[in-house]
Length: 56
Length: 239
Image (cartoon, rainbow over all chains, first blue to last red; front, side, top):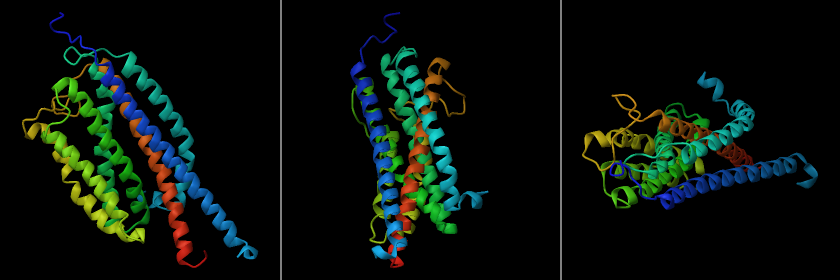
C-alpha cells in the first residue's frame, strides 16, 4: 500500500496557493468596495453642490 | 425580460437588495468550502495532499472561462443593441476575470512544481489559458485607452468577441493535443470521474467563487454607473 500512496509532504505548496488565492480575493473585494464608497461619496457631494446655488 | 433588467436604475435597485444576502452566502460557502477542502477531504492516492490545491485551482479556472464567456456575451449585446449597461457590465467583469485567470495560472504552477517537477511548460492548456489572460488584459487596456472612456467601448467589445474563439481551445486543448495537463474529470462525455468525497468540496468552492464573482461585479458596476453619471454632469457643464 505504501508503494501506491504518496507520502510526500506538500503543505508548503498548499498553503502558498491558498494564501495567494484568498489574499487576492480579499484585496479585490476591498479595492472594489473602497472604489464604490469613494465614488458614491463624491457623487453625493457633487449633487449637493449642484443643487445648492449659493455654493456655485 | 432582458429589457426589464437592462434598465440601469432597476438594475441598481435589484442588485442593492441582493448584495447583503449574497455577501452572507459568500462567507458561508467559503467557510464550508475551506473546511472541506483543507480538513475534511481525502488525500489522492497519486497526488497525496497536493490534491487540495485543486480546490482553488479548478474553481478559478472555471470562473475565468465563465467570466470571459460573460464578457463576450455582454460585448455582443453592446455591439448589437448599444446598451450602456452591457458595456458597464463588460468593464466590471474584465478585471475580475483577469484576476481569476492569473490565479489559475499561479495555483496551477504551484501544483505543477511538486507534481510535474516544473513550474511551467508550453503545454496547449497552459498556453491557451495564458492567452485568455492576455485577452482580458487587452480588453482592459483598450477600453481605458481613450480620454473619453466610452470611446474605447466598441473596439474593446470587438476584441472580446474575437477572443471568444479561444474558449473552446482552452476547454478542448487537452483532448485535441497531447498535453501534460490531465484531461477533464467533471465536464466530460463519460460522466464525472472523481469520487464524491472530493467532488463535494470542489462544488462548494466553485459556488463560493461564483457568488464572490457576482458580488464584486455588482460593486464594480455600481461604481462605474456613478462615475458615468459624474462624467455626464461634467459634459452638461453642471460641474
